[in-house]
Length: 475
Image 1: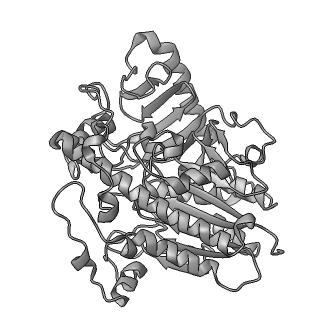
Image 2: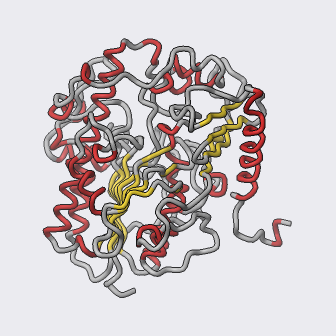
Image 3: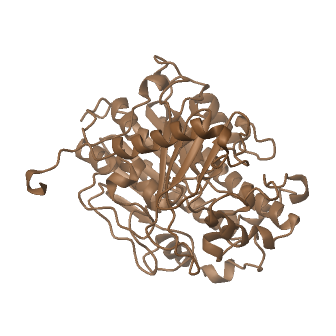
């Protein structure tokens, strides 16, 4: 491959919801560098993850295939060795590929993540900042600088607190590794994948960023008292403690505590923004900005107290599955374009392949939005609906027998979540109730809409089957 192909700088945060960029309407947060990227590129305001937790979402958007197809359907599962990541595709085509931060395509609970043949030549692995593993390169770097993580990191028992200083933070370290990779001498295009742990919980931004936000000037979470009464039991459990009752419980927090968590979350994102600015300026200073596709996105969202729940789980509210997605390529993609088309993160792989002139393999299930980026297609139409799933396959809580096996379809005007094996579900009229507070599942006036959306759910479960032909040996 000739070296006139574009470089790719792919920045992925962890657990950042869609409504966290100032230029896109959040008047409480400061994101000047992301605002600039919005003005320079194409912003998809309705981009959706295919799963609200890490491994299935990442396995999906890195292959262009739905979670149920990859087989990595929940955290704690490993992506099968025969799945092919976009980094492997690009490496085979002559790209030099690097990664910093987390990957999370395999179990990493009390064990180091195993890799498949992922195509990354440079692999600076740090699943999260906490020094749980000696292989955590961020922790190794911190120690090499003469610092002990435990001496720097002093949680005070509150839901939100000041963490490690900005210059020693994992967010900055991830971006430093990217800059080192970008500066390598090579005669080939490159892909650098930066996977920052922030703004994932615990909510622990650098103090200098935390101090910029006054919790008492921030809005309360979007929760209507009693709204969970006719919603699935999993949400009622998480109201008292996220992750099946184990972590932050909305019902146990004061209003100030909740706003303080929002302040910490915004501060973490502002710190991310500060480092995004560093990366873009480095591309400009080294003369590479014009020939680099920059992607900014997140793997899934964060409930942040909305609906009386924190963190994530089998909950398909927009704040859980709708994420920021900005893509910029100066001189090629439209500048300042805001598309409200329904797009899925599974669509990123075919879009990148289209952008560099590579054929899209049959196995890829996403639909390229390259023409929207180029300004040659209607920017407000891409798909009629988005599909998301959550198949954990095990009890949600020690006191519950029910398993949250959830299939979700969202159109522009409605959303349904069908819970397999249970006589419960969620149905929302997004025109009358954009905040998704009133569950219409059992409302007879909406029976026709419910049947139509259930048919869409069934169709999606069939149409997202693996497009690869079944081998004769499997018959």
